[in-house]
Image (cartoon, rainbow, N blue to C red; front, side, top):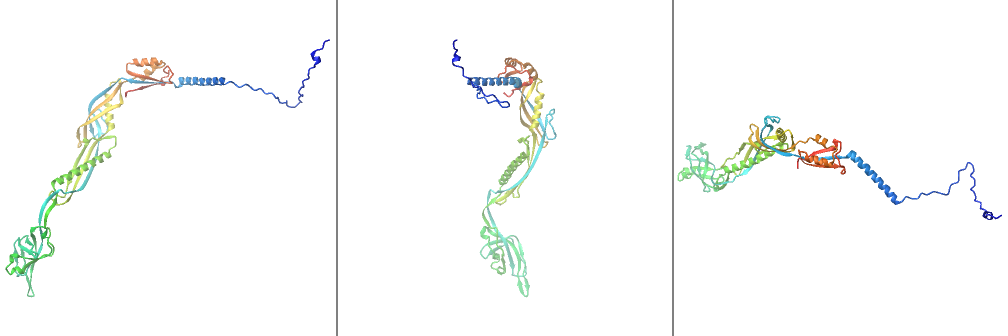
Length: 423
C-alpha cells in the first residue's frame, strides 16, 4: 500500500490558546480593523452639496416670506397758480378763509438817547471888558450926578466908561472930618480886547480935570475887569442841530427795529413796511447861535410793528389751493409756494393788505388698492405693460426683492406703491 504524503510528513499540531478560565475576562485581541480614509474629491462634493442645499432653502424662504415689490409711479401733474388778497388784522384770533383774513399781532418798543456833539461854526468876536468901580465923593456933602459914559482912567492908562447914569452920594462930617460918599458903578472898557482885563486899580475922572473935583472924585476897583476878548469863537449852527438830530434818529430807529425783531419768534413774518416809527422828542438846550464848543442833543422814539405767523399764511394758502383743486386731483403739499407784497399798511388801525401769488403742483389721484389688486400675481413683464398702458401714469418703475423673482407677490401687503411727483 502506497504511503500518503501526510503519512510521511505528518501535519504539525497548531497550538491552541489556553482555555479561558471560568469567571475571567477574555484575553484582549491583538488585531484592530482600521477603516481606509475617504478621498479629497469625495469631501469636496459633500461640501458643494451642503452649500447648494442651504442656498435652495434660503431661496425658497426669500421667495415665500421676504419677496416684495416696489412700484415707483410718476403720475400726471400740472401747476395750479392764482392770485389773491388777504388782510392782516390784529383784532382777530384765527384764520378766516371765507373772509380772507389772517390774525396779526402788534409789537411795541420805545427808546431814548442823548449824545454830545461838537459845534462846527466859527465867528469873529470882540468884547469889551467889564467890572465895578467904587466911586468916592470927597468933595462935599452934596450928591454928584455922573452921566452915562462918564470916563474913568486907570492908573495904567486904560479908559473905561460908566454903563448908565448914576448919582454919587455926598460925604458926611464925622468929628469935623468929611467922610466921602461912595457908590459902586458898573463900567465897560472903551475898546475890545483882553488888554483891558486889568486887575484892581485906582481911577480918576478926566471930565473933572482942571477943577477941584478932579482930586476929590476918584474910584477904586477891588476885583479884576473881565470879558475883554478879540478873536474867533465856536458857534452852534442850525446845521449842527439838524445833523445831530439825524444821527441820533437813525441810530435809535435801527436799535428799536432790532429790538422789535429780537422779540419776534422765527414763525412770525415782519415786513419793513409793517414798521412805524414816531419821533416823540428831538431837542437841545443849546440853540443855534450859541457860542459853545460842545452841545448835548437828545431824541426819544416809539416803534410799532404789525406781524403775522408764517404758518397762518401757509394754512390760508393751502386751504385756498384745496378749494380750487378738482375732485380727481390731489395737491402736493411740499410744492406749495407763496410770494407776497404789501398793498397797503395802516399801523394805527393795525391792518395790512397783502397781494398773494400762490402756486402748487396737483396730480392725478391713483387708486392704490385697485392697482394692487390688478397687479397681484402678474409677471414682471405683464406688470410693466399694464403700468405703461395705465392712463393716469406717465412713467413707472418696478423694483423687486429678491432680484430673481419673476412675479408680483400674491399678497397685497408686499406691494408698495410710491408716487414720484418731485421729478
